Length: 445
Image 1 (cartoon, rainbow, N blue to C red):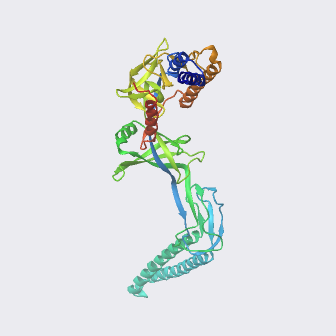
Image 2: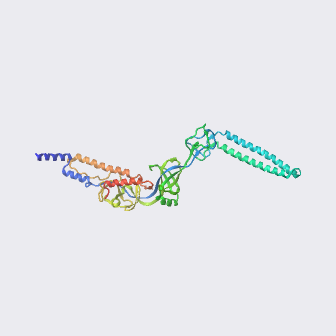
Image 3: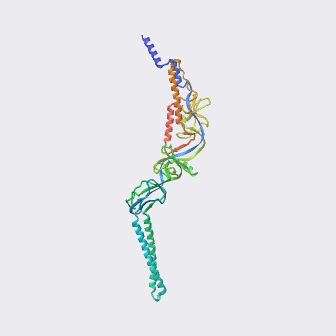
């Protein structure tokens, strides 16, 4: 009875497994890759000119900013600008009631005319005194008349100055734009009384074309920065906060004359034409500064570089589709590209995806990520396991397609390489996380 129950239990077990003991062993061998090559995605190492960028975070500053205020007291008769419009230097922005100041100017003009008439009469009296001489009048009277003429001449000059002052004050009743720029939101409406001491002003004008960006870089980058700037003007690229969209291209204008001791950073100022109005005062942007270009270096995708106990390495695909683990030396790397200093030559194929079952000397089935590999792992099943074999084929095909999709997502759209370093370490963190995931999946030797 016991023997019968054991036989029934064994039969049920193998029936549920859907294979014989020999078939299970063969399946385990196939699942571990012994039954066929490992499906991987590989790319060729290229030779390229790699630009070196320094990246910092900054804010947009208007090249000129002015708060338009009244310089005289009075009633605001009109506001002659539309909020948010572009204005030219000298355009009329507002007008203040000029009646009082016009009266003061007229008074100054009349006072000068009076003094000029008195001066003319005094000069004629002096001429008469000088003709008769001391025969009719004393020398003292002649000298007094000369002094009176000079006094009235000075009074006329004072009147002229008063007229200029009154003219200037009258001119302040017409408020004009100090430079080409863009007006903001109106701060005072028509009909209000404005005063010369008002803090708010009437409007704020900012010059947005061209425009500047003030940003910072770590003080460790200062030697590289000063060396590059001494060789010529450094191109600057303004990027969105996610560094995915280029907003404008300009040039570095100023390196500050001191390092901020609290933050250990140096302030820089770049200027941009802002023709498309993509930069706005107060906006936060990232700035990339081109400081150098590495000529003719070996470039590999960053995802191909693995890290192990002995340092960095890559898997090189040989002519017979055999993976070779090779130690390499990295001179520079960011989250997209790595510059290979030693260990790799241009044109060699390196594995960029499919590290899960890959090891040194393994046979691989290579694809570039755009098409399915020519050879798929062989799945050995007995005729009685038709349904299981079909399911295994689907599982293997799904694994290959997943590897191809991962490679397409990781592969850059263009072979052109660029390396970026800056004040933030987000790129390094992303790269480190990527490499850690490779180690977890068995990429380490």
